[in-house]
Image (cartoon, rainbow over all chains, first blue to last red; front, side, top):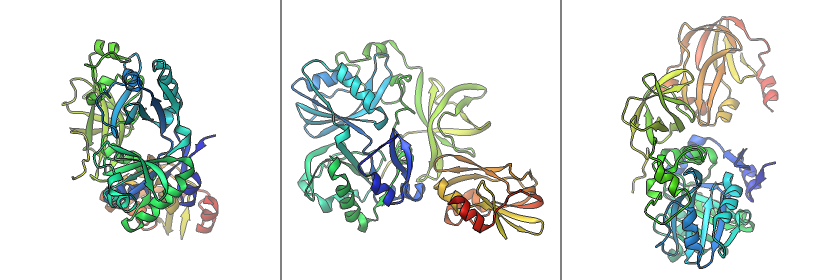
Length: 358
Length: 117
């Protein structure tokens, strides 16, 4: 049976349509996915993302030990900084993609995808050198994402100014929200301004209610996994199992900013050095009639040159977009997708598809 | 009178002409219609078989025809504004069909309401 987050009853009460996602009963939508999507682009939405996992890595060698299991370089981060990284395997594929939170020089939190928690915990723990503290705290921690341009005013109502992280990819630990101890992070998976708020499970319902109530004047709405997926697609953010997997080399996914080949040895470095990329991750606008979703074949003339890894209608842009994995050399060619036996024209465009106005 | 199919389409049958759409319940399940591939005028359709496809916010759905016959008119407005189906599924008709036969087991509104409970 699927697990439930501490907010499960809340979702049911709010009319959430529950589906099994990443082994959790979570709401795919409350009302209409397109409306929830627009709520995040225009106002502010709340997402229960408590299925995400958190791994605590501590000790004086924590940084060095973590750096060995990550593709990105976490040396030189400041206390309260967040950094994106891939978690590579020996073959150069991805075990997962993760966020690294540096609370201080001896305390790091690795935030991992819900579907991968057990796998990642076992992987990281077994590859950390001896003497480094490790604890999987996923079952104790809840996470609520507050996403949308009005998230700023919503959080400002509840949190002292000096406790609000300002920079994108920074956070503040032990932030008080009406008596609840939270970690407040300027991060998100929607391409919109927003925060992710971590708390202990016991406080999740109270925190959710506080955010809903404080957000009422800004038009806050509970949002489900459906909108989360369509929002991250517009922002061209990769999703493990789609753009990333253990079968896709991490140097073929357009995330080179998070792969530091110059740093000392790390898992998979040798495999990546030996592998010259054969594929590219690119974005395309669908110019023909059709929605290109994942796992559709991509053609250049009669030659099959790749597959789509994610795709849907872009509610914000008004046309369908998709991310593709295509053979090198075909990124600027005329491409078509096979949509249930019909050829549908694509136009390769820059990612992200949607970029918020600053 | 409006009748419903188990596959969640409605048909408003007047004489030998039926206006066809999808139910409010189906629209709710789809949770946001993003595109419709309208049938073509002149297309022959069979009751219980595919009439056209519709793209929802999560997946593509087959729309089945509640009647047999020939498509005589399509609602082209849905081409540019498929969300009309979300707004009012009963008003947002997909096409009109010249009916030669009606699907067995079409339900009245009451029966359909009980069916989706």
